[in-house]
Length: 133
Figure 1: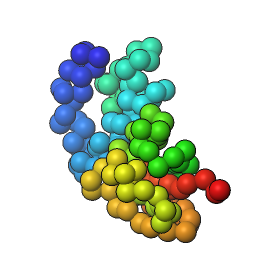
Figure 2: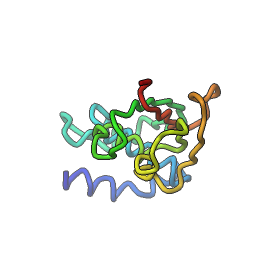
Figure 3: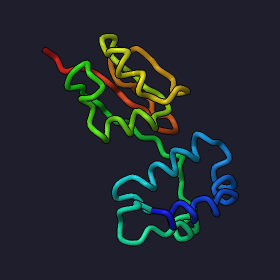
C-alpha cells in the first residue's frame, strides 16, 4: 500500500488536471481504489500510471440503493458505509434515522423523498430506505 500511496501522491498534478473539481477527483480515486477497481490495493498490480494514461472518466452517473437493516449505523455493511462516504447526493425516506445520514459526507446534498430520483445527474446518488414492515 505504501508504494501505491506514493504513486498517488506523485500523481497529484495529473489528478488535478484530469479532475479540477475536488469532489470529482475524490470520487474517481474512490472508485479506482474500490475492490475490483483499476488500482485496487489488494488487486493484482495497481498501476496508477496506466490508470491515468487511460484518461478515466469520473463524470459517470451512478445510483446506489441502501436498504437499511436497522436504525443502528453499526449495522451498515462496509460497502454501504463507503458509499455514504462517497455520495454526492442522498435521497432518503423521511423515516431514515439521522444517525445513518450523519455517516455521509458533510457536503453531500440530502433530499427527503418518497422514492429514488427519476433523473440521473453526474456523480454518485444514493437512495436510502428502510424495509417495508
